[in-house]
Length: 565
Image 1 (spheres, helix red, strand yellow):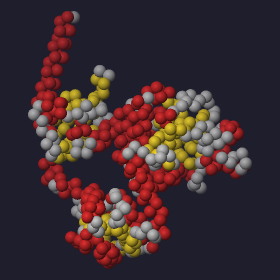
Image 2 (cartoon, rainbow, N blue to C red; image 1 turned 90 degrees about the vertical axis):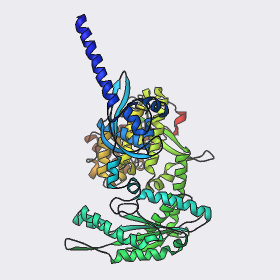
Image 3 (spheres, rainbow, N blue to C red; image 1 turned 90 degrees about the horizontal axis):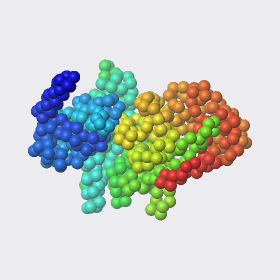
Image 4 (cartoon, rainbow, N blue to C red; image 1 turned 180 degrees about the vertical axis):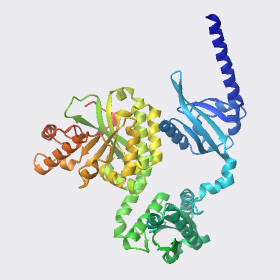
């Protein structure tokens, strides 16, 4: 027995030596880190790849694995993919060496558990040469791959610089925003290959008109922008007319079919009170929207005095406030308890609510700023803040997490289709060790209709892991029952306008009863909102509604002042 044990021990030692030799002599960079990014070990090839003399130097100087990436958020996305698929293989990412130079590497990795600790084991090798053979890194980063014109990223960078120049030297600056029409018709009729060729041909013609007068970029699928500075800025309207004429005269031919296009052009001159690129882009987008309302092939110039633009002007002020709130931690989370009506209340059950805090300490309700956030693509950033802040708070309050039965978190419709946010959320669950079954995501009925496929895909991803999904404001649309069977949801939150008058309005009571009957047949729970009295709560309980939420149950309170129900 002793001899057998000795042989087994010798074999293990030999295997360990083989592994050590492989680790040290591998041509690929190999490393291990904790899930939070702290480096544990690196091999010589890894050091060489990132410009360090030896493993000791690298482990001393690199505080976190996110320093490998030119964009540190790429590591979060990779972790999200690993949490989703179990591993990542051959993901090509832009990295940064010790001396600050950028390069491309391919990374593969997976998370393993050892001695009750979770580690990320990864391998990396340089793919810069192959990347550069197709297109230079600089060109790839700044140009649209289909059309060859500048891309949105480069446009945003140049616009930021142009704004700084305009403010510093009081020079002119004008932005044109072009939205092409009829592209969808070509895609639907002839396929995306034809649509791509159309975009490529037309962008060449539009770019030649702009030429050296300004910067021409593709900022969306069928959206382009022109940046004009200095002496060229006052000539923007003339250039807009030239671009409009190019589109009007353009003919696209595909397999004996001839297509004509239209374009709407929004013009936004810079004013001294505009401080961010987002504001100027939003103004140009709003002007483009007004041009579209006039009909095909129109130009509209943004003006704060234009009555039609006043709504957009108000929204623009919220864009600035939202960005400031995100940067300066001016958002605050509230909670509102909800109560089970058919079973005993166990643990904490509440909905998270968002508030924006003003300098005087007053809280601004979300209905004031969320419409602007959704219109100008800021809602996903807000959702990201809510999840990161709340999960971090739970980590710091483990006793609260233990007693938490379910928290409801609202997601905007734009977030549902944001693939990067989906990976971020997956990673957040793993990073903070939050049990999936304790989280319910709420999506609104109106957005679920508009983004049906994306909504179902998003729900399926997280439902498999244990999350619950609720359809908020149900009953607000006449088509509600038609698509309810198509959505794999767990709860239905009944629109408050149907709930608050059920004691005096028999039609509202009948609709609530109808929703209850349908959802029960589909195996879904019901939550009644706007429950403002004990009498309404009792009536809902008799109707078989599962949960009640509203001022009659509990008022919203700051999360930092949490009290049990």
